Length: 457
Image (cartoon, rainbow, N blue to C red):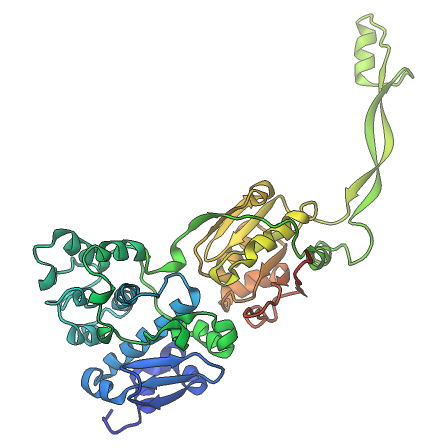
């Protein structure tokens, strides 16, 4: 690699064997060399561009490993900005967010050649800059050395060591601790990597990527699915593994008309006719007419004369005509405010669904219909179809409906086999301004699709 090569070619050759799907991203986003950005920036627009400052690369990202870290840092801004798990409003928020990302990247790419971008760019002798810099000599399973700027500052030194240990501190812990030592005026944005423009200026962290750049969002998700992950989840830095319990306020009505149709199909009932049908079933009744039975025979042998005798008489009752269907409700971050409305729709269909509803994000949490009606919910805010496939297989479920926006990740080979063994229906979320859904992730695995529409008030 030479400095005269175009940055696009250098970037392609920096990632070993074209890993992490970067070739696909580079085909999607035009790479532009410009000095208008301090380091790097992804323009999240309908025609996205990856802006890279060649002067910054020449001074600070001259090796392939450093260039990889620079681009991965910016991609993390895009992805975490989309999930909106962390606010990026003030300069202090920006500082803490960069500290979180740099710690994540240091665990993902722990080799010294990759961490050199951060250790060379930042100084451990300046506060709060030292929180953006991993230790010079360090491995994920070793105790981090205390930066020079934190010597004698016991609480901040302990916080820094936790940042580069497992498990680490959460975003809120970092912000609360640093806010006692520095205010927004003490955070120079010039030391931060990536895109830190005001959100109103279209920064990559501004969220709403579904409407601003849906194609970019889809490609970013595919990249993230293939990123290596730490063997041990890092609290506050691995949002896929943090389960948070919340309380929902269910609205008075949900979009259940299309959901009922889908439940009928999956239950094998068809789309017409009543859900419950009259059927003759014998019931037990007592009367004076003698009948040969065990109870009467025993009483007579004891010298007693029974006045009433038990009979089985036919009776017509209303009974469900199809199987109850297991419903999996997507409660990931991308579902946002739709979750209460969709939960209401599932509750409204209570006699058609299994008594246990399965809430899924990156794990499956089972709740009863009564608990769902009361607003109980738990989510990691991430999304993975793998946990649904595993849950289906473990519990022998053969008929299921997923209520989701479709952004569940591409299932692996084993998960595809488990999903294909099930009669699967998908109810896609209502389309609203600024929101989207997709069928791409589950294409070829779904027996029936329906598009939910919002209920009228």
